[in-house]
View 1 (cartoon, rainbow, N blue to C red):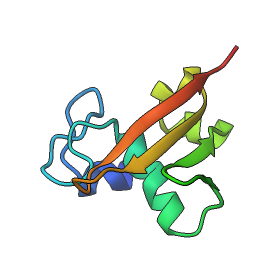
View 2: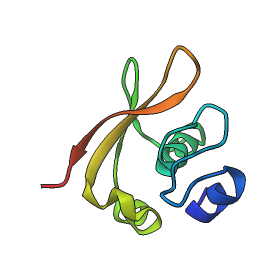
View 3: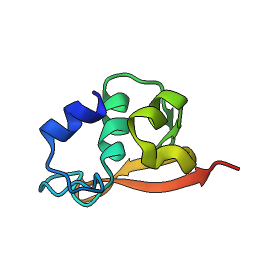
Length: 91
């Protein structure tokens, strides 16, 4: 799913923070992007409590906010929300 497709599907503010009630509320739009990649079979690094992704050039093209990220981890919380839980920055 692309940035534009996600913006059509989810209510976001001008900074691409998801405003719509649901599992992604309050998260950057790219969290939903990576979660959809994961559930669609994208090979992330599955840990015991989170899924890690290396941020690729094509991800940064769609989401300029990812420019400073080298990798990130997202996880489903006990309340069934999906959240960005950790990240590493580009050197």
